Length: 62
Image (cartoon, one colour):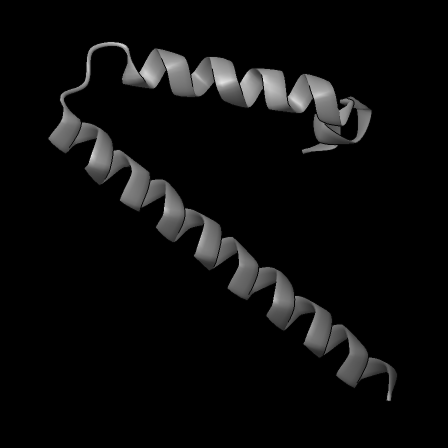
């Protein structure tokens, strides 16, 4: 994860676009919908984890 600290937002979005294009290259519409749903679930899980970590950190300071 330390590599993310050295990457510009522009470079990160380029990598994300390249990954998405590669994943979509040979996928059917149904497969891409499943993949999109999976990635969305990962996003929501990461949001939940980071929000709870922030709350716990604030509770520890109080």
